[in-house]
Amino acid sequence: KAGVTQTPRYLIKTRGQQVTLSCSPISGHRSVSWYQQTPGQGLQFLFEYFSETQRNKGNFPGRFSGRQFSNSRSEMNVSTLELGDSALYLCASSSGQLTSGVYEQYFGPGTRLTVT
Amino acid sequence: GNSVTQMEGPVTLSEEAFLTINCTYTATGYPSLFWYVQYPGEGLQLLLKATKADDKGSNKGFEATYRKETTSFHLEKGSVQVSDSAVYFCALSDLSGGSNYKLTFGKGTLLTVNP
Image (cartoon, rainbow over all chains, first blue to last red; front, side, top):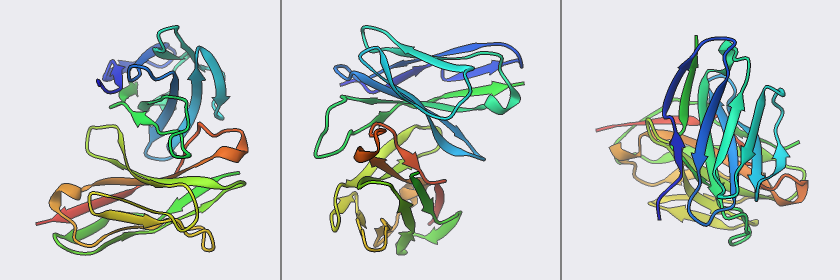
């Protein structure tokens, strides 16, 4: 099976712009989660989608939004970019079903966003 | 809320040395515990997991035991290799907290193994 793919891998944007990142989950997986990774804050949960519905959301401002399509692919959007949004954005894919008591999540390689 | 605290790095070891990376957690419910590894330029890979007290997760020579009494999940390996150089993250998910899809991570520990 192909793994989780994220596009683009690298992105440079200017303050005030908006950006859209894409994530394609493992075939058959219906859950996609997004995380932000920064040196200062570490890994922080953004949101999770299952069958096109947002099930859970982290503590991020409304500038961060996402959606999921019927083929389970997901996009996240950040509007009015700030310097502090520079980070590695990781997408994780899950079947959405418990496996041995846990929701196993498989991570993509991430999109490195630099805001100048 | 839930939180994970792991030892600050960086940790530098010689090849074949013994590794311990400490991890403790706070959770409102009964969490599942994980160790993830991140190699340079890559995403996170699940290294091992444990879902209940006294469970031992193991993979690639790494082990960690779920200790409910001390709320800990320390990562150990008896003999590290240069290829183990990476950042290690301890994480939990809490099925009872209504946010069971969410992983809460520690800050990460950078391990460097020298030949």
